Structure formats: structure tokens, C-alpha cells
Image (cartoon, rainbow, N blue to C red; front, side, top):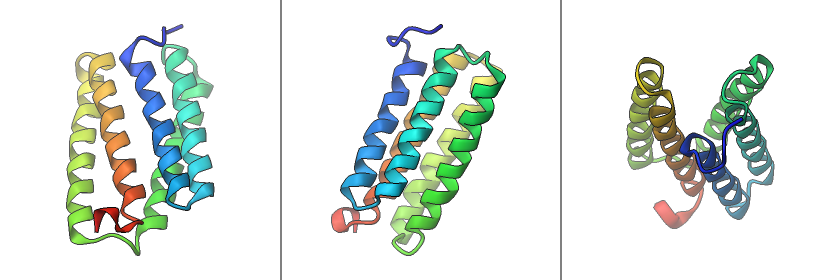
Length: 131
């Protein structure tokens, strides 16, 4: 099992911050979904990415959270939001690909950071904070 000090594990805790943001901007169900996604990812990485069921659950929650949060914010997004989100997605996908080609732990950690920033942008786009 991984140790909490490993970046690929502790960066999952950033998603708890995302869940708190969703709660603060008034989307409690989305907050719970993001929190469950964080837990699924944490468990998957805790088990050193070796448990097939944990991987399936992690992926299911990740895709569900992506689709759900995108639906929730669609009416709030501006061109600036879309541009910032596209940058997060672009770099995230590059890092995700590099994680499978090079050093998994390092590049997957960068992927987590991109997801964190993307989810924060999504949550904050529902407020006047980023308008």
C-alpha cells in the first residue's frame, strides 16, 4: 500500500477541497459526488493501482463527476471559463498520457492537479467570483 506522503496519493485530498467548494457555492449533491469520487480515487491509489474493482469504481466515479459537473455548470459558463477549462483539460490529458508512457507517479500527480484546478473552475463559474 502507498503512504500518504506520496504525491499521487495525497493529491487526492485536493478533491476534498473541490467538494467543499461545490458545497459552498450551493450544490450539495455535486459536492457529495465529488467527495465520493475523491474517496474512490484515494482507495485506488492507496492500493498501488493493483485492484481491478477499485480501478473500475474510480473510473466510474471520475467519468460521472465530469459529466455531472459539466451539466450543472453549462448555463454559467462564459468564453473565458471555457478557455480556462480547455487549458486544464489539454494539460491534464497530456499528463495522463505521459503517466502511461513515462513515470506514472509523477505525471499522474500532475493529472490530479489539473483535475483539481478544473473542478475548482467549474464550481467557481457558478458564482460571480469569476464573472
